[in-house]
Length: 135
Image (cartoon, rainbow, N blue to C red; front, side, top):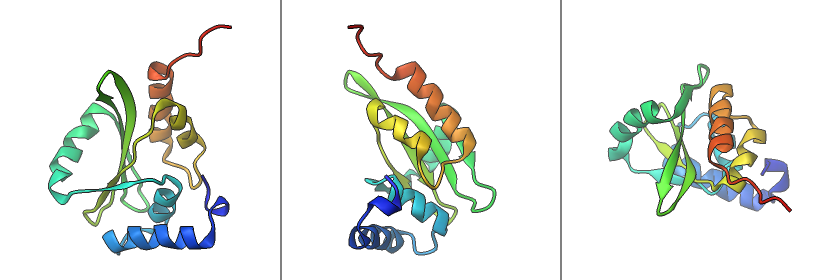
């Protein structure tokens, strides 16, 4: 979803919610999180966990903003989902979950996710997304 497809009220509400949780968030990260909606705030005590997840998944740190992007496959019951995180240099972090049909939208997100994370997400999709049954 792009900012252009949102109503101005909904766009403003989403940005306000994000900025209440992370007032010093870089504009680029805020715009990405609005496009990734729905997102969830990650509790501060989970940051050590985020550090360990960088080894389990794919990650890239934006050199310009210092924002760290982490994506990994997460088991839920008998299926797996894509579970990316946006970790801000100011200490706040956000999570967004996608099933495999929605995960493809992350490859065309505007503003774009970092190239390394997009590549990792594409690999996860190729590996884990269900293939359609032949007709």
